[in-house]
Length: 185
Image (cartoon, rainbow, N blue to C red; front, top):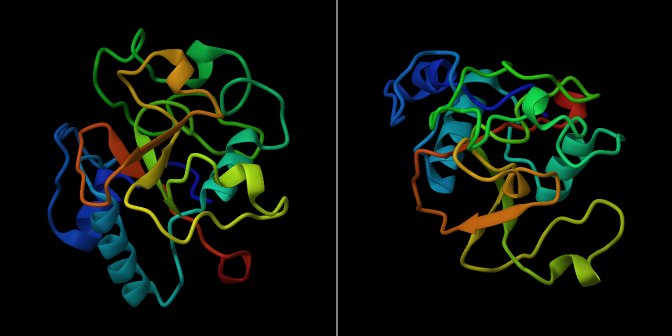
């Protein structure tokens, strides 16, 4: 799992443009990208690197967020130490890695920007999904978002919070994080 969200600098190296509404620089999360834009970025990145980066499944995202640790947010219960959210963000994104990492060394999994996941959104999927490594619904019209964002209340930034938008939606509070199979790291 990527240590942080894909940054504007990483996006510009692959895509040659910066779609972000908050054009603040290379270490800020890229935002204002759709699920489809994220897939296009990943296709180009894989072509350049010969690797097989992808969006994480929702289950992978939550496992990485929780990092075998208890806590309401990704990394524990200390909201202000872990999360850029409505009350401390100044209504804008922040450079990645500015808050405390979780036990796996991952930053900003709660707050800053919502993160696209590979899955189709299905509100009832987990009631009947496999217990180990569920892959998400194979159909739908909305894609999953996880992690909350800089202008949301804390309850939307907690580890269990789920969001969804259509795959073509672009918002200044939505970005993504990369996953890479272990054998390719």
